[in-house]
Image 1 (tube, one colour):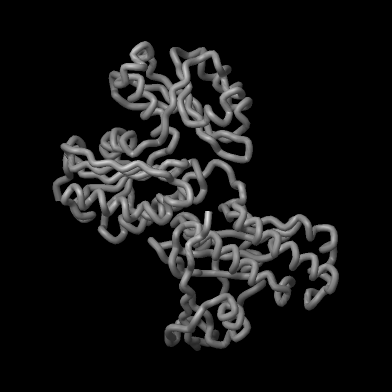
Image 2 (tube, helix red, strand yellow):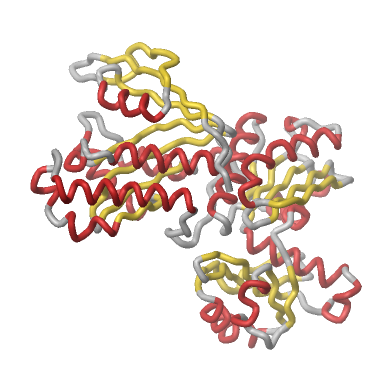
Length: 432
């Protein structure tokens, strides 16, 4: 099949990494676009707005050459929403995806602003931009990019990083400003303006879908497009601010820890030892590859047929949602779930044997519930061994109902097999 020239590419681009949801569609000649509030609305509005743009242009997903997605860093839920939609659209229509760093799109948006808006004519000579966007938790995401007019491409000068405005500002002053004519672009000025460098020009800019469309052709020519299932959110820090709903999960988990510390119900000496000191230190964290060894250790203790380290690595590479509950330095439990458009499939939920029977599974289910609804999921699916009566009782109490049976789905030892009970639960939208 002949590949289209990059000038005539048909592309759908979108970014939901900030408080703005931005989409743009091109047929190679004309551009259709939409911009509206992002945040909590993005998870429910991104797909309808993308389909509306396609209808306006008289195109189908299958008519496109590729999807372009802002992959982060940025709002955790927003970045996951965009990447999940890119995976779903790409997989369903057999389209490749071009992932682009959010901050590179901000730099491109700033460059385009000073070149094309009359109010910025005095800055048209500036082509190098340090960029910052709000990272919450009193931090900003930052990077610096230099534009080569001869090659019409960007070069990264300062890598992506997160830190306080003062820390990023100091990096810019030391490593960036001395190397040429620079400006500061981004969307963090209203929040952190007094804490960011003031000696250079400031250009308001966002990771707009128009910027993604301008960046995409060169990346396409460089072979940056990838299979939809390979697209992953780009994070540059492990911990993110918890939402109010997530804080409720942690509060419930702390209550479980406190009860176990007082009563020691079914935990045994190994689990209850020190609980009174660590019950207030319960954390809900997203699992990264750095955490996998401790997760695999729990997995091997919990099951006769455990997931392997490779299974967990593949899940993270595929962009699946994975969180763990940690108390002190001990992993209490975790889950792994696969989001596909407006559905979530729970693949693994495990409580460490020493902590079973205390209510931690319900906390993990609540955490998954919050995360799934925050991404706009409308229902959740899972399979459970037919013999696992205790787990089915927990799932039913949480709202799952049995909808089917998969014969001989699980290995059961000595070449035997065990059937899986298929369960489903409807989800309500998460209130902002």
